Image: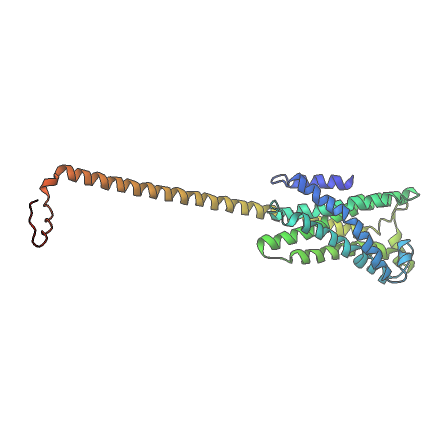
Length: 307
């Protein structure tokens, strides 16, 4: 439900020049289905990771290296790569991808499709007590779902800016920025049990079992990302409006040039008609016999002018 509501929100923000529903659904479906190969890739990456990854997955203290590996290599890199591929394969070359805002919309759709499937996976492993359930719900609805939308939108925005304005880090740069944001978000959560075990007990402070302090930094990352995407959307809409205005002015100039060419052709026709009228009037004023006749050709040798 949070992912669907977020999709509706992005649709409202793009209401001025909305995208085709079929393309939006296709990108969201691609983002959701991409979770399947991502799971396989993550399982393979875990096989090559630190030995204490198993403890980390159980929520037990492990090592900071395991937390960083899990956050950046196992989670962020393949998941953001799946969103990038969903954007590339199902929206990038379509004719409706013609604005900067489209990169944000389709990138967010890919991220929300992925988040929707990921949420289903988390619902299949519901926690046993209320505190853990609240932490899971808030973590998914307030942080993870918007986070996936934001990171996908970041990829799409920088890709679109590079495409239309020839500036910015582009698709790969946007992907790396999204991986950095996603990895920093996960790293704080994955390293929290280890930090608490090392004596940083302030990270476990919370209400009714919900670790408020532990989620403060991820919340700040998502909030900062949301502010960035909001500013990017305002910039993209302004640039798209300006580009549309320039296109309208160019079309108007072209129409004016065509009208001027038609007027010139009509003027040339009028001039030709006027010349014909002048010639006809001259012929009427001076009959044909008034003009000197051209000389007759000479008779052939030995001939005469009579027949």
